[in-house]
Image (spheres, rainbow, N blue to C red):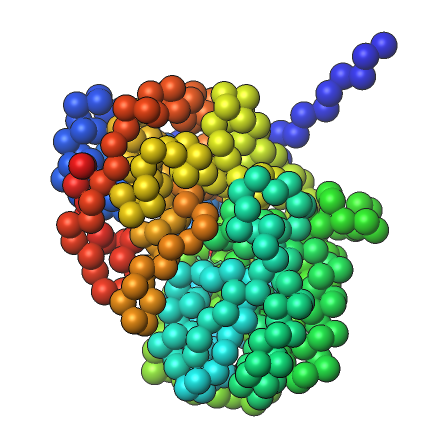
Amino acid sequence: MKKIKQSWAEPYKIKMVELLKMTTVAQRKKALKEAGYNTFLLKSEDVYIDLLTDSGTSAMSDRQWAGMMMGDEAYAGSRNFYHLEDVVKEVYGYKYLIPTHQGRGAENILSKILIKKGDIIPGNMYFTTTRLHQELAGGKFEDVIIDEAHDSESNFPFKGNVDLNKLKSLIKKYGAPKIPYVSMATSVNMAGGQPISMKNLKELRALTKKHHIKIIHDMTRVAENAYFIQQKEKGYADRSIKSIVKEICSLTDGATMSAKKDALVNIGGFLAVNDYDVYEEARNMVVVYEGLHTYGGLAGRDMEAMAIGIKESVADEHIKARIGQVIYLGEKMMQYGVPIVQPIGGHGIFVDAKKFLPHIPQDQFPAQTLAAEMYLDSGVRTMERGVVSAGRKANGDNYYPKLELVRFTIPRRVYTQAHMDVIAESAARVYERRDSIKGMKMVYEPKYLRFFQARFEKL
Ligand SMILES: *Cc1c(COP(=O)(O)O)cnc(C)c1O
């Protein structure tokens, strides 16, 4: 007898729905033009399925909403802060917690404390805000991710790994005292949500320990990384997500967190460290940039929702359904021949715009163009992760990243399988008429993080 497949399904049911506006092609054409062909500048109201980001777009649970009602909005010493502190210690194992309004708030404080002018910050691929804060603090980011990460066709299961030889050469070239820490992200966003293996992280720990270099963990998607370790790394199949998450954190010295991703809240973040001296300085500095150290720019209710969300985020059944949905979409797109980054990552599907639109040169923004075409076709909003996002170097030249991608990011617990079908079919339709699609030129460019506000015109 044939074995019947056992599908994953959501470990929750729907209690409330949000109605969406359906638009026509003509309406979308107009909206796109008004937005300067930048999906960041579209009005959310004009979007049908919003895959711009998985940041702050999760659906909270009934328990989190109940937690919101338990907000203790005291200026100092809110009960919710102590709850969050307990949860961070229990789930992640870091000793000291500084809440911040979101991830970049933590990055700002940490970079100011640990980086001196002229320092080198190696990392497993840059992230936009993370690198910018490192640079604003006087440091220089150096990419030490393995080469496979820059190859959209490599099927290596742990494309988030650090190339230890690249790191060794940096240590040799600059000397360990010039390297305050390695910036290590789990589930590397810009590589397509690709995980780092525990084996690689252990080797990284051994090497950095030898040279007295810290590891600072960008733990925005640590639970999703843990899922790939559980599924693909030898020796972890029987381990819970919770125990893998804790082991990852135990191999690092501190972390910045955007709780708007893994932790299932709409706003929030934190800095967590094990070193008392760093904590002491951060606790002083947070007052300047975010708020008192027991709220860091958040309402008490936000901290409560975050504490509950963190616990929900490391449940095995949650992560299995979360990533199951992403894989469902990716496989469907592959069936239609749409070129995507493989293996499929944790938080979305990354379409390879260089392969999708090979006739459009990188300085005519193929990924930006494709994101605009997707919106036009079906009202699905995606995001450019290519030459626009990469920005300019200190000397004014463009960075030309190898990967020119469009990110289809899946919000957690928000859309259904039918939505996934609509997205895949729309991508297939655009792919079918790819030869007729023309590139764009940038007509307005802001100085920092240009991808948010840049404007374009069709060529
Ligand atoms: C979102 C994100 C950040 C920044 O966090 P914000 O909450 O948006 O400020 C940092 N690192 C990674 C990997 C992220 O995805």
